[in-house]
Length: 412
Image 1 (cartoon, rainbow, N blue to C red):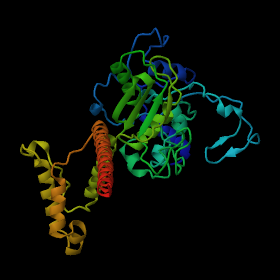
Image 2: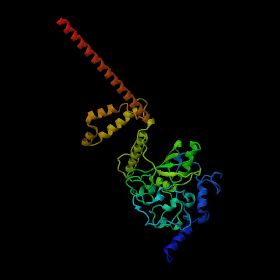
Image 3: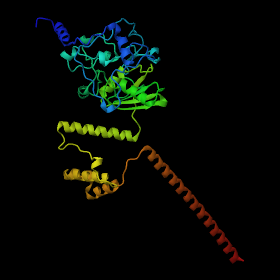
Image 4: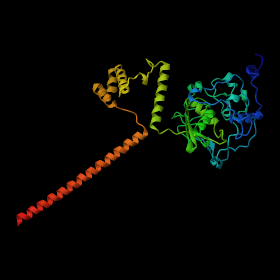
């Protein structure tokens, strides 16, 4: 108790450190990070022997959230004096958090450092004094100069970060905004669930499975991936995480970084997928998460159950009939006023059942084919109407000529 607080913290770090895990020299931090991330043992990136850091991830379902190692965090880089832009030059934009000037229109330089969880993650002062602290932004970019003395956490986000952080702030404690920036960069928006990243300028020379494996290896380091979609002709990919905190960590850590082909990738937030099937899947996942949260809090009387395809008997409309029967049972358990509002009585239930028979979700191609068929049918109906109008006009002319001839015959 006689020692100062700083000395006691340093003693705790000294006791928790393991002799089998050597601390890297700060002067060699960039070389070690570049060698580990580029899968080379200190050689040239294009000609080195491949040495994966976390192994090859064959399936997305086999991933797990990163675990904080029981060791003190190391200093990633040395502190260097760097010339910066003076604050009085230009105007400061509070929305973009940037200074106005000509340099903002130039292409961002390649990232000089990169965070590697295998060597950089560890315990800091925040793990003992403030366990609820946010993650260090400089640690995610690979250039934190404090190491174990940092007042923020040096680790990858986990499930606790997903539940504890609020919507107006990201995993680093920065403010989020009401809408995306024009360049889809920055911290994102709180109006949408930002889990999908756009990765541009990737090298698509290798086959598509190899490109997918490369993205899984580099982006799977920051959290569990939900899906990876590669558009090889356009040289871009869309990566979706299961947690928002993992997507925010990956966006900051992989900005202007290099993959296996020594390219400089462009990481931005992705727009919403316009595919109706993707939107339906997104809504269903959101509903399942909401029901799971309500069940965890005890707000549901019974656990949410979804019909299993294996338990449904064969036949046309069997799944729809099962869903309609479950819906009718659910409406019967409601109060009379709410039951009348939901179903509209027996006539409304019968109408809903008749309308749901034969319903099936349609793809975009089927919607386009149905629209083309409707347009073709409308054109055929218009042609028939025009033909009928022409026939009626000809018959009217013939009747007029017949009446004129009859009048001339009677007059003579």
